[in-house]
Length: 374
Ligand SMILES: Cc1ncc(COP(=O)(O)O)c(C=O)c1O
Image 1 (cartoon, rainbow, N blue to C red):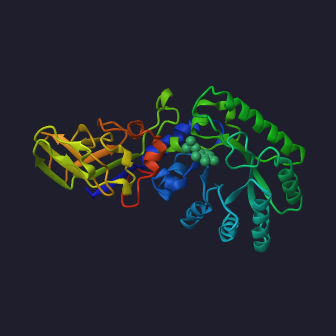
Image 2 (image 1 turned 60 degrees about the horizontal axis):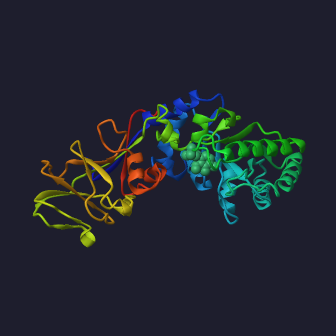
Image 3 (image 1 turned 45 degrees about the horizontal axis):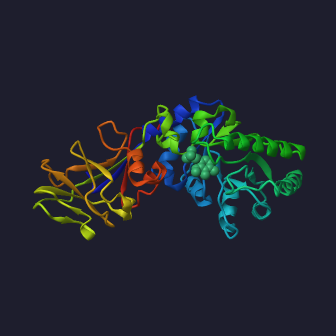
């Protein structure tokens, strides 16, 4: 095998989207931002479309344009952009990428780009219903609606969607969920009063897609579940299949004496004569440095824990007396079918979420694709 590999199972991604689609009557926008949560933008997008997604979602405009450059023509929404991205906005409008608009400067930016191109831009107005992140706040919503209604009447924009994002969907039953749905309904009613009645109202992420049918509206926007990781782990796996296995070939194997200090600062010391295996993955590849002495690893079917500090390029694993050889496989995480740790196990070990574990796998790790995308 290669030195390091993130093996991405496209059949799993396709199947996960089919599972999500079966959970809703709404359209499915597969969120493929951040390089498809580390799984590969284009490959993930194609597998998601094969699984029944009819939309793709990205944070950055560049990510949506990369989809277009690769010939992917599915409806696509980009939602996070800054005032100087005029060229990106222009390219988005030109290639039919829908843009999220939360404020007047964004409305102006889209109109200017479209006027130049003699096109009508497709926009989704975003209301902040309680996340306090992106989106127009309730105080600015009437002004944004008025300006948008005017632009729409003048044929300067097409309002395709009105949308928002949850703060607590991964905690089913949290009172904030109902508050946000109510605020979203109020925002839609405000929009309707000024003649903005979009075909797509959307609010649900993965957790809401799988646990909150009343929040599905016309389209759902799952991300993490597309990649097979449970958005509400305390409620099980929802039949999702993890799409990524992170593995490496052992670069060195050596027998050392009892009392050998291991890796920088000797944060680990061998208790007896033992075998140390060297895994060529480090924090430059996305292995959290605080996985020192706690990150789980499977080698030749046996579970171990990283021994000593995580370095930039490598980690050491004390495998005791297990017979191992250079080139043998170390599996850091995968679907768990062969007893290997999961991304959730990693998240639990280092105090983060599985989103971060898969998304931060770095560019030195080769993505190898298995399973038919379509
Ligand atoms: C606006 C928006 N919608 C949908 C998603 C998908 O969320 P999840 O991965 O929890 O399904 C994200 C991801 O953070 C997002 O930022």
